[in-house]
Image 1 (cartoon, helix red, strand yellow):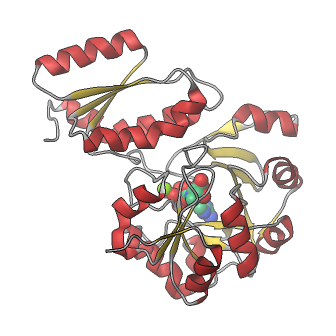
Image 2 (spheres, rainbow, N blue to C red; image 1 turned 90 degrees about the vertical axis):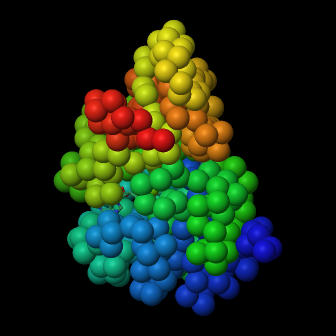
Length: 315
Ligand code: TXA
Ligand code: MG
């Protein structure tokens, strides 16, 4: 079968206008896009991902004017959008009446983001309407950061893959709620420090399942078990012990944190391709983008932890 890749934005416009779904590149991870106003196409996105329909989707826009038609911007939201868009920041706002409930899982809030990728920005601009785009992986799995990852995960379930190369940032956008308070619901490359500096105020970091549905304890999970350690020395010790017990083990350790984020999901995928039983990952120092890396690693490790307690490793 010919690969469904293209670099031609007009082909993607055409598929989306005809109720199709298209994988799109962004600076964070690849998204699985449908026109936000097209109920059938949006429901297909949920189905292809195996995602529960009450887990709301992020709406991707190409201009601030368009965003303001979809969400109610507070002063803080406006400051953050002006400073960080296009970029890896999603704003959670009160929705306007345009926003269909099939996008928000029935909620009165909407998540909005302007991605920083030239192909996807021109796609949204040419369409003249926003796109929903959850990460283009099956529910709970590792997000894709290349067109090939999308094909590996979704195969023929996606109509077209717009190939915009490898994602530059590599982890999903920071989600910031700007309704009554400003709160970080998911850490990303726009850090707590960046946001506090722009707003000249301290903000809380309350990422967790209660606020943004779909952010469960276990997520971003490879097949191999993920074991977290604090230093390279501990990683080598753990790897030695586990190898001694007969497990195939690899170590994830990248002191350059920008590079760590950029390659994290590729490395988790590669560990599975190489049939590792266990991935021993060295946590990043906290703060900055280290918070996003550790958040994803902790979720990737979540079901491993309970298995380890019972002494079981997945075969
Ligand atoms: O970087 C990203 O944000 C990528 C790219 C493709 O843009 N997208 C992405 O989408 O990560 P997804 O669906 O995998 O994650 C979206 C998160 C979910 O945890 C969802 O619960 C939260 O955003 N979210 C979206 N709308 C929301 C709402 N109205 N209220 C609370 N949480 C919301
Ligand atoms: Mg996702």
